[in-house]
Length: 187
Image 1: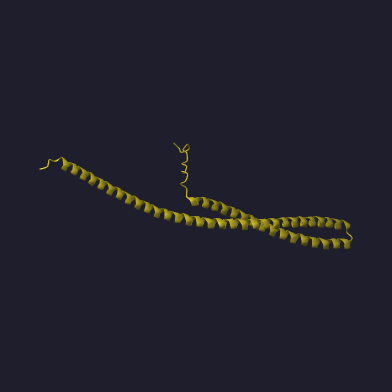
Image 2: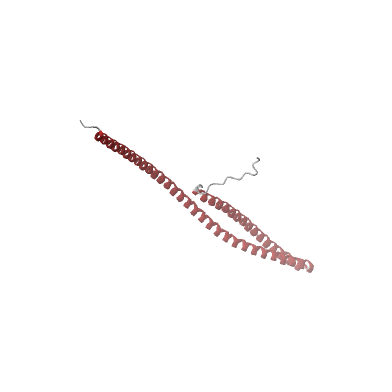
């Protein structure tokens, strides 16, 4: 009626292209490779941001040291204490940034290894697919050649059967002729 209730036609088992399995896995691995590249790009961006943050915090610490010195020289204990607290907070942010960058470096190493391994497997599978395609093509050529030989053998056998049938017919005719001669009165 509307097509809602129709069952989808299932493919008969064994009619699938043997290379389709390779193509499906290759497509999936290509998508995984894209995801790995996105992750690598994200990590690269993150590492760049950590490097900027580290540089900024180090500059802030340098500036704070100078300002703490100035406040101490001026005898402004309150300003000096605020600046020291700022320095502690900035130092803490710098340490957290360094830890995060170290984690990002470790993750980048793992990701680099994963990408190399993935690309190696992908290339290996591509080579295997090319080999499988070549073997399949060769197999089809051999099958076609063998099929033509089978067809030729079949034609020869039919011809032999026809010859045998003709021989039998001749033999049968000879038998009937011989019988007919024996039954005729002799003169």
